[in-house]
Image: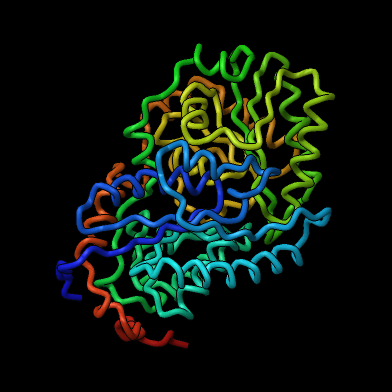
Length: 402
């Protein structure tokens, strides 16, 4: 693809639906604002607009960004199941269609693999708006996000992967090599530039003392594959209670099927456990990463334990299969969902040997330059070169011999 600089300002529409995803996108959004040939548009949707999930659209506004459109997707329903997710996607496709009609973006920029992003991509595809996709090519065998991520890859015209092996996988899926760029993980940009809060500031903000060991915990629903379900969450709580001196900071599950049920379970456990626990629906990127830096271990099944924690220099206890298939740094400790396995992994994370490994801050997701690399490509792309999406066939592979 001959990437030529366009003579007019391009409107880059960033879609965000969750607190974690926005934390990764915020640096890219700032960089877009700084580019004279790019114009930032922002659509907030889904959990950002829900009181139950912290109304985190307010964080976007507090950071100085303008929210150009809001797409309501979640219903205030007692149900929390797959049908509600399906209905949310249906509302989202329609809502994004109207939002794009009003904004008329040149590119829709999305990150990841969640159902609200699937809705955003579907609407953009059907309205013939090029899609730029971040974090494609990855494997997470324990979540329906796996299929959604690959579906968005096939709808997208520009691809920004977090590692070279992921770039090769996107090409393997039939995407033209000249449209696929290994830019690293945007989360590392945030870490590289963040002015971390001090321990004293965090203690004042959370109104508790952060006595060691500090466990930063996030546990999301496992939507695919083998899992013990709620029993796994109970096992995690049982394992944590073996560490009587621990301080546990627990962030809420995301807006997946069963997410609200898990949050209710955790909040009830917080009331009953003898441990010192603080539960927050959302901490925001600054507080979350500052707590990560102070933590003795990041615990649960969030991608932040796989991508960001190693770059910060903190051991990770990764539970179950939700992140199965992702590249790992040596500071990540995998365990199954039994209380015994989780407890043993926690003890390993607290060991001097594992701390020394984590201190090396070995990351397999780039060097924290994603925002610059992505914006450079957005500045120079030409929409005419993205039309048609011909399928790229790999070189001929000889058949297996008998």
